[in-house]
Image 1 (cartoon, rainbow over the protein chains, first blue to last red):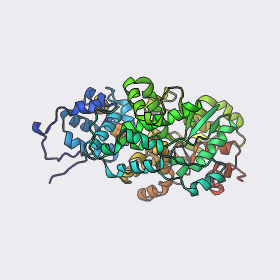
Image 2 (cartoon, chains in turn green, orange; image 1 turned 90 degrees about the vertical axis):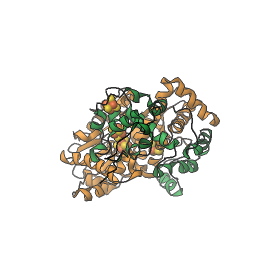
Image 3 (cartoon, chains in turn blue, brown; image 1 turned 45 degrees about the horizontal axis):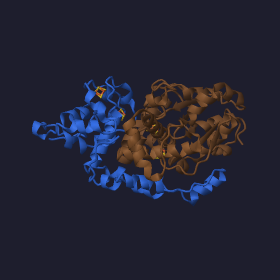
Length: 184
Length: 292
Ligand code: SF4
Ligand code: SF4
Ligand code: SF4
Ligand code: SF4
């Protein structure tokens, strides 16, 4: 039986050199605080401290970093793991090599998006923000409750949020059509 | 002390009582939390899709506060994290600063680096202090064992928070609990992540992660849990009975926001703190004789 784990590597599958993109690690290093990835010496402290890993042994953050350093680009960017990091910063605090793993995981998510693999459940946030400027609508219902408590009324205005998204060409980005020179 | 209160998206939708209580308690201690209409989402949830956009939204909100000349007080851990991180990077990384200033340029704002962001609990701990709070207590909560739930983004990454508290062995929440007269419950799970940010990907993992925290509170015999983030409350409070069903147990640990328990000790009524009388009686009935 072949088992596919959450890192998207089949248990009986051998990664061969011709599947590897040797440039991948540099692509990650150019992203959002992704530069730390080159410092990883594979000690496994991150995996040991990860609270997600505790409940799913397939989520092995050290292994994701190793796969990235090897250049297994497709496997990493289409894996579930990058989306399962809860950004708790436990590993970030403890890594002896200052890899800033939480930021590396964010870089991998952003790269997955750029390559057209945005997770559908996460994608939905963009149109909501464009509509309300917040992650939800504040209706008369909420404002009535606020008034009862003596709080100010909230009038939502998404204009500035939209201006930023337009400047960023976020739509193209989300469709995997924008390759920019690396994030910040 | 004047601060602009940054409520973000979750507080007005799911935790109005937190906002109400923070304003009341702040006022009683000389910390004015002022309303600010123009604030938008801090950008945290889109970090996963595009960190540039996320950071730009955070910086937009920082600029709005800069133009009022006031520091920001926050109530949500994740808002605190995203805003503080953006401010930190604007200060320390030139490439980042240029790029984000460029992204927000169509809004007409530019970042100047003149304000700070602080979580309301941190303000109470650092700027007000235990003594001043104790002096204001009229109804001690002595006899209650309260478990602090820190969550992650209130403390970590520690380098952006000027070391105001220890990332693994913090004490700011314990200090505030002690000021009410109650006893803080010590349990090793107090700084663990509830899994809230990955709730959109499925309930099972966050429920497992939160169960670990609730189990710790129960093992150490907590009467009450106190949180400093609306999303921590979603997992510890709103999900508590569902998690209990799954675990085959009833936790029975009522959850409150930090300013609410402080407000009770200051003699505010449940209603004034956005609480129901029944809720307070259930949690503190034996201790607070009269709950109006
Ligand atoms: S803790 Fe740091 S150095 Fe060790 S495996 Fe994880 S990322 Fe690499
Ligand atoms: S930040 Fe992500 S990878 Fe690191 S410990 Fe937390 S959940 Fe695991
Ligand atoms: S962290 Fe959450 S609640 Fe806070 S502003 Fe951002 S999306 Fe809204
Ligand atoms: S414990 Fe959960 S809600 Fe609280 S800060 Fe961490 S991820 Fe956010």
